[in-house]
Length: 64
Image (cartoon, rainbow, N blue to C red; front, side, top):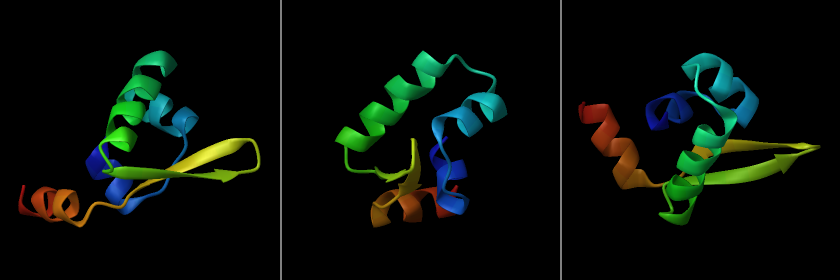
């Protein structure tokens, strides 16, 4: 999920569709990542678009 958010900003519906997970599961994971400061959500109309903002998380994922 985080690796996908590094290359693309996207909203919950898009993540749910891509990962084939329940919306509640995706929302829980996004909440944990957001509270840890790894991602940030930005409201665009009725949707929230998420992106990775933590440089250390970005670096770690680049190394994987």
